[in-house]
Image (cartoon, rainbow, N blue to C red; front, side, top):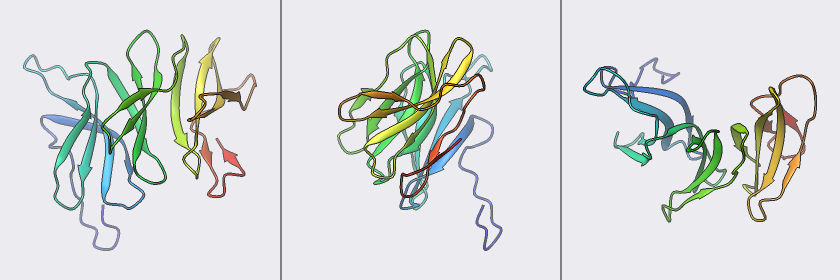
Length: 171
């Protein structure tokens, strides 16, 4: 939706494709989202990670691995996309490099991980992990892959976001 003009732009075609959880690139030139396509039997495919160019209206399927792929987010410099993928019995976090086209698995646990979000400098990800039916927040350093548990409560913590200066986290 263009807030100035009120004009809506439909990214998915509506009849053949469904989309969910879109995010803008830092330069506002692209959208990345999870998309499902209708199959011949009227079911939908597993979700794919799709990059959409706002200038030329072209779509590029980045991740199509026959698994559920969700919640894509851009790195602050726009060069990478973090997302979750259920390639085994749980959702793990992956990192796709838009320049090299390399895909790197960041977490590999028996627990579900959800809601990845980059630190302002792009060096860490914060995310939610479900252990014993409880969601807590964790942070992972993308160079060392060392993790730090941020919360340990009886309540569920979801959708963590860093402040612009990286000094605070809301959830």
